[in-house]
Image (cartoon, rainbow, N blue to C red; front, top):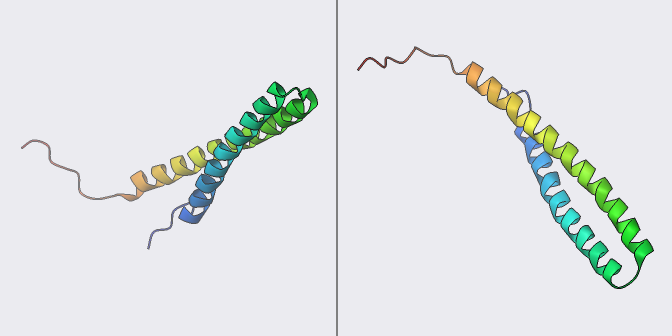
Length: 89
């Protein structure tokens, strides 16, 4: 049995976190906009700061996800050893 460097469970967790952060970021920024239109500038500022923090965490998670998938794909291409294909036909 061949083991991948990054487990599929870790990739699934990173993917789930990315989905949750995406939804959270949209909701937080939408509420910040609504609160700002209602005249609560301090509330809008706080929610924008929270949205920035969630956005940064989202970007970090996506980078980790891409790196994990890249490492697994490199490992998959190296582990497929077999006879060379004959393309002369």
